[in-house]
Amino acid sequence: MSSQFVQFLIAGINAGAIYALIALGFAIIYNASHVINFAQGEFVMLGGMMTVFLLALGMPLPIAVLLAIAATAVAGMVLEKLAIEPARGASVVTLIIITIGASILLRGLVQVAMGRNFHRVPPFTGDDPIPVLGAALLPQNLWVCGVTVLAVLALRWFFTRTMWGKAILATSHNRLAAELVGINVRLVMLVSFGLSGALGALAGVLIAPITLTHANVGIMLGLKGFCAAILGGLGNFPGAVAGGLVLGLAEAMAAGYLSSQYKDAVAFVLILAVLFFLPGGLMGRGSTERV
Amino acid sequence: MLEVAGLTSHYGRIQALQGIDVRVGEGELVAIVGANGAGKTTLLRTISGVQAASAGSVRFAGQDITHMPPHGRVRLGICQVPEGRQVFGPLAVEDNLKLGAFTRPGHEIEAQLAGIYRLFPGLGDKRAEPAGTLSGGQQQMLSIGRAIMARPKLLLLDEPSMGLAPLLVEEIFRTIVALKAEGTTILLVEQNAHAALAIADRGYVLETGRVSFEDTGAALLGNDRVRAAYLGL
Ligand SMILES: Nc1ncnc2c1ncn2[C@@H]1O[C@H](COP(=O)(O)OP(=O)(O)OP(=O)(O)O)[C@@H](O)[C@H]1O
Ligand SMILES: [Mg+2]
Image (cartoon, rainbow over all chains, first blue to last red; front, side, top):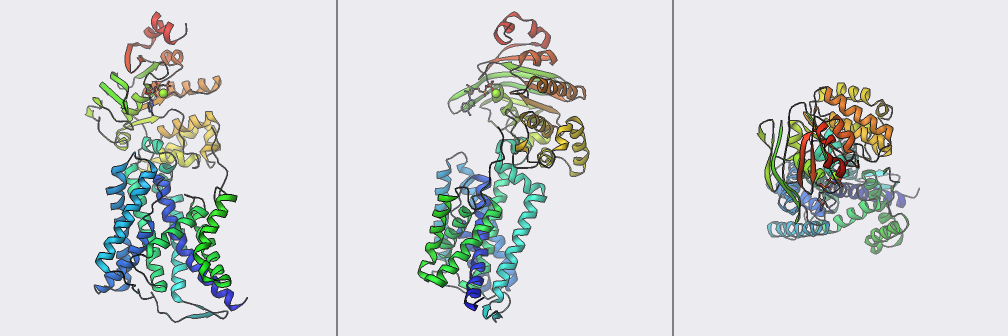
């Protein structure tokens, strides 16, 4: 294996993990409400920028990171409470436009409060590269992958082993039946937005030490996460993870072997290909419904 | 136990309920029959709270629940088996049943599950399969089992025999009679008016959002106008 290839592989997996986290956020909200939440990228931005803000206040890094994630989860719930819930019954397109409006608002607020500069979050555990097969692996790369794996496992446990996780799945499948078994579907919506906020923020704080962060960082990351979610089949959790990895790797290879100018185009080419050949997404499955 | 008074409800500008008075006493089995579009489903939806009442009131066990959210009513013991079964298709049969007990304390669930599998042995054999792969009859059993998991005080059944083969229809009606014998209060909506009135203590005939007849099941079965209009006799 050439060391160059290993380096691209590291970059691809790193980006793929971040896209996967963002895509999971899209999937959770899509399942709960059929809304494509275009403010998902802003959750990523908030995670990084709030960490920067809290560090500037003098907080230690672990506390700042956890608080930033918690605050973004709250921001997600506020978005649901103030913007999505009052519009209940409106068309899905209306709701999507509301999320676009919310994303512009969030971006604007952060620009006003913290300016348009790039900010650095220190790496969690130093930045001495670890040589691997001739390539350089950053400790932060390990954090990105390790935490993403843990988050995916935790989500899987939540959705397959806990009653609350199953209640969220049940609500996404059949809201009426969920109400009739006594699930508080409004609370399900709040929890879903909170969870998506936390996942987005997690992605944001993990990647900030590697790529820097700024008020507009959420636009492109949100779009990439959206692409990953579509690649995997919107609302499909394993698909979102697979879509993220495929996209991250494809981008890294295209940037490395073709030209870094093509990097951002890869996502859109992949989407077109998938929509054309596999309309259900990479993990599209036959319906199990019987009528 | 349940008192519905002057209840009206709308879908947009269509008024589906035009002022309904219905009461169900503790332990009673009350049937509601009526033509397609009479408002039977809307009545059950409004009692469960998934459809808003425009006027009138719903009282349960002495409490006004007209504006209570649906999950609150389930906690009080009002459980509905909705029209068209509405199982959680991708989730396993057992998960569907466990979700039925969402409002109940966790330690009850295993005993409740065992009870459902005794009542519907076919479900026990398929407990790990996605509910969407069951046959129509089994999905109906599952939908009923899911509601029973919540230990309902008042069970609302919306056309439980719809679309089922005669043998299964018989089984469903036997189950309803057995549930009543155990003391569950039941409000049964049926297009199979004859069978429903035959097992009911009392019945209501609904016509375009109004109650047009109200009597004991036996009396309605003997009423010439009801027989002509709804029983095809
Ligand atoms: N979702 C809806 N939107 C608009 N109108 C509706 C809706 N559901 C029902 N209606 C109307 O409300 C009235 C009552 O309908 P409902 O479903 O309660 O009748 P039903 O007695 O249950 O009929 P069926 O025997 O066909 O189940 C009908 O005129 C119907 O057209
Ligand atoms: Mg109906």
